[in-house]
Length: 288
Image (cartoon, rainbow, N blue to C red; front, side):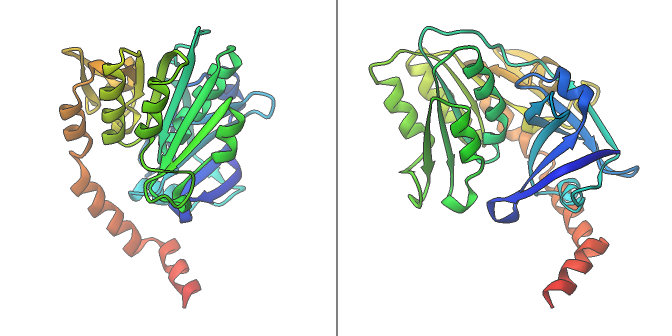
């Protein structure tokens, strides 16, 4: 068992942080890589990008949004218990080097968890890191303190203006792209529409941009073929060739279509879990 040593709910309980004992993985993990987790013998294998790794403590941190059956099962594992399986680190790590100009790290929603470790790595390499994070509303914003510590400067946006800048992350991104300081690279993770608009904007300014396409991964070993993406006209597998790619070469129409391919099945599976799982019954009893 891979024990959960810290468990924390965020974003009104829709997002959960787990710090998990995995000393061998923690020693090898690099920014941008992911792990595969399985709750129990009948559980689905879920790939999640590591938000942090601490070799000294022997732990890795993952953050996930509670959406379908498997993430609901993950949510129901209490602190002190753990996962049956934890495999990693997998995927190609983020290419990190010292840049002459700013490195802009852009994260939206749970994508903030993905870019956190990258921001840490970029800063450790001597870069001046400006992070721009956003959410629909203040209550859904995650990891503000951790992102501030990983950055030289943090910009926070909310769609409804309830906190930080009123508007989208692209509004602040444009200010930096048009500002006096050279921007050497942009790294982005979040909802597909957000990444697409970031890619379109940075292409206009000819700024190299990486995006994490981890959300499309399923099997995460290159065997199922479900995470196929077209990058510069070539077919790639997100799990083994990525999960990060040149944002300006991604076929965004295809990616967004494939991303929603299994939504009906995911919805049905999640409903069945809620209806029959004992933890659901216990939660309803507590509310009564």
